Image (tube, rainbow, N blue to C red; front, side, top):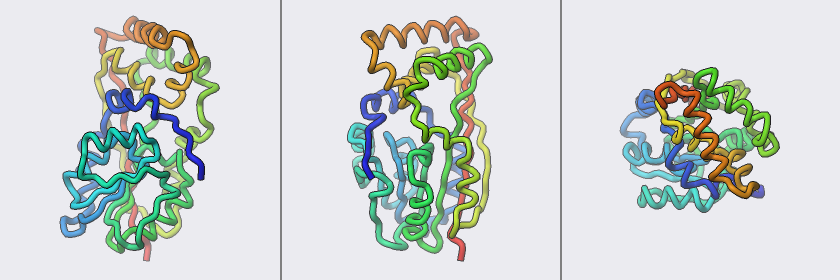
Amino acid sequence: MSFESRFGHCAEEFQRYRPDYPPSLYARLFAEINEEFRNCALDLGAGTGIVTGHLVSQFRGVVAVEPDEAMAAKIREQFPRVMIRQTTAEQYTQAAETVDLITIANALHWMDAAYIFLKAREWLRLTGVLAVFDRPLPKASSEIDGITAAEFQGPWKPYRDPRLKRDLDWKEQVRATPGFRVVEEAKFPNIIRMSPKEYVGFWRSTSYGSAYARTIAEPEQYWNALEGRFADASTGSVISADFSSTLILLRRSQ
């Protein structure tokens, strides 16, 4: 499968402005795996290592699979003991029944999900866990959301990859995965207070926002103007953004 970089040019913004998942999500995830079964964790579509870093503190060995060179470099800088495989999830190979946990966080829409789930079942030990978690695009006040909606319908629209629409039905797809049974599906609230600059930073880290900015002569002027609009629409220059996430835990069916 060919790979086209969509985030390498905004890896810095991705690392700086993408918020982490809530602590309660990680607590639930790790509660599912006994200490004796924490030998190997595999993070597919690892990005800059947001989830990878949490796995490092819990597992004796961690593999981060990330095809983009610039994104993988961010993982290498932060977590030198992580084994990084710079390839797509589809191209990655792993010996059968050697993994205790596989995580796919906000990345399933970029993958051939059916094929990845097939491989995940092969890679996982009988006691292993597959954790898929995602979050919709952030929501804020109606005024703030109106500004981003205008960008979605305007300059960003031509740069939105059709695969991003998979965010709408990813939970149904995961629930129907053959060879697995759902252990739990839970939503974890995560309201983050952000400055207008930080909120713009999130949109700068998106594949479409960053792609559009690369086509214009003065990208910083564009982002500064968007920040100003967010500031004018926010209360006290603080934006309460909803980044609530859904976690689905699965185990191999017998």
